[in-house]
Image (tube, rainbow over all chains, first blue to last red; front, side, top):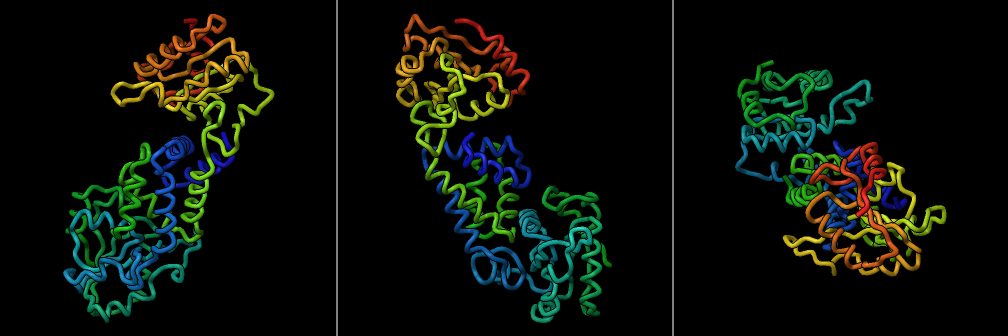
Length: 196
Length: 196
């Protein structure tokens, strides 16, 4: 195979859940397309990579200063849902179970991967609690050691008696990622969230 | 989700064997990456889309005038393997069963999809037979009605008594695409090719 095509296949093969075979199909399909889909995809991706950045308040990706959730005046203040990344916001929004505000950490604490509190979007939570009159923080983090560690760290870092904390009810499979759960299970887990 | 991200997800979801969920994961993974993978992928794709084109002789995608198979002087002349597209060349090369020349049609004749001989890379075959002293044409086309129709059309269009024709032995599953067959089956099919 041409070396340029091979390099492109290797880059596509690094995408989540895409192997070498699927990457080859994708690249050849794009390059053999005569309607300019490769250019249009590349241009859109380049544009997004340049203009998309985390929302200054909650960390959701946006091309504006504030994301659509922080701008939305129909959403309730008072409840803050803390998630690991944007894909978790996407599934929660799809299930329609939550209408408060989000906070995207951008990862979970991990000794193995060397992720410390400074690497995560944690430090702005206390000021959001005051400015948005947050009374309940709902943790929708992965049901893993890292997720639970992160949750405990945030609870002790906030240390505010006026805020109650809850986490999603069991129903989230152990070791599971939020964005592979069906809407029904996710809704039940939200309703059955436990006080901490 | 941000409208720009949503549009990008829709473009990724159109790629072969990528659905909306996988596309969302891919796009968020790329945009949340801090090492510039999104830019680098987009730039590589844009560059490939601009510089990659079919080889002037055989139709294999390349960024040169002639592809690496047509330039390779260690490959035997005399045998021409006709395939539907470049992904078929990739699996044949991976199996290592063929060391002659390739000819990529760029599709198969199809009444339903309105693909006529003029849409395919067929007209240059007779001149290749003369210039490359081709004595055997091996059809490695999909085992479908379209594949067989294309094969019959090419045999009658060439109409040359000095050229023998063969097709891959059965072993290629009916209705199956070449690039999902394991190397062993493909090799057996190549060895057992039938005279027409």
